[in-house]
Image (cartoon, rainbow, N blue to C red; front, side, top):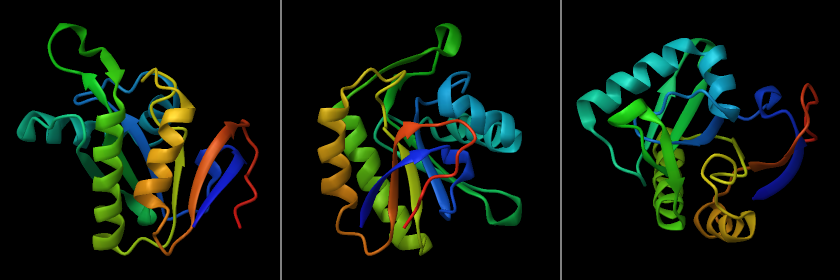
Length: 161
């Protein structure tokens, strides 16, 4: 069940937050920066995972923190390795594969709800009109609430049904 909401995703009541990044992303922009600042251990563990696994766009990695915090890093973008670690552009193919990986994680972990932003439409450079159908296709049949934050409103808790 996909619900489009407006508000601050950091105030979500969802069990997990999913967001788009590049392999070895410095997480210095947008939602990734906010998550990096709030959960510095997640950022450190993500870089360790990238160093060991050398993941490719389209994969996903879930991090569990204190008090049940769950962050799913969806590799929606190119880049992250080599010169400056600057994330490159996202692709619809990478987003689709990452969402498929998220669906498998949700089923394996037994998540009861997930919140995500308009994936890959900021730093990733994709159009929401292309990404929204991918979210609906990959996550629409899950029998849990999927909260898609279509508009960011700092400090405002979304009305999550």
